[in-house]
Image 1 (cartoon, rainbow, N blue to C red):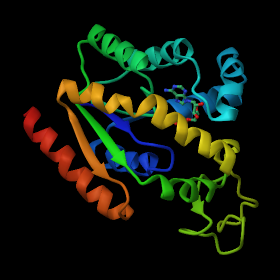
Image 2: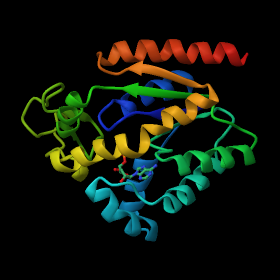
Image 3: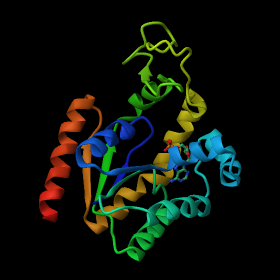
Length: 219
Ligand code: AMP
C-alpha cells in the first residue's frame, strides 16, 4: 500500500505516521527527514537545499525528485507512507511516473486539515532531545525542567526552521504550493480528509478506520 500524507507544518503528520509504521508495518519516508540526514552528512544535495530549507521555502523540484526517486526504487512489498513528498504538482506527476515504473500507484491520500491559528503554536513549541530522540512540546507535553530532557541527556533542541518567522513562511508555502495537490488527487478519486484539530488519539482512531477500510478493499 502506498499512502501519501498531506498536511501543513504542525498538522501532526509525523506523529500519525508512527501509527502507520507500528500498526500497519508501513515504511516511513519523510523527505524532510531525508534532507536533514543529508545535511548532517554534508552532501552536495544538502548544500544546494540549505538556503531553501532555512527560509521555509521549497527545495527545487529537480533536487527533491532525484532524491526521492532513489528511495522509491527501494520500496519493499510492505508498502510505504510518504510524508512531506510530494509538495508540488510537478513532484506529484513525477511520483506517479516513478511508481508506475515499479508497477505501483498511490493507493490513498490522507489530507490532514488543521486551522491555521493552531499551527504556529504547535510548531514553535516543538523540542526534541538529539541524544535519546524524546519529543516534547513546551505547552502540550513540557519536560519536567524547562528545556531539559527528562532522561538527563541535557539541553533540548529546536529545529532551526521551527521559529515563528520561518514557520509562517512554511504555512504560506503550503497554501500556495501544496494544498492544490488535494484537488489533483481528488481527480484520481483516492483522497480521505481527516480533521486534525482534535486530539492525537481522535485523529489516530479515524486514521485507523480509514486505513482498515483501504486494507479491506484491497483484499
Ligand atoms: P518538513 O520536515 O517536511 O517540514 O520539511 C522541512 C523542509 O525541507 C521544508 O520546509 C522544505 O524546505 C524542505 N522539503 C521537504 N520536503 C520537500 C519537498 N517535497 N519539496 C520541496 N522541499 C521540501
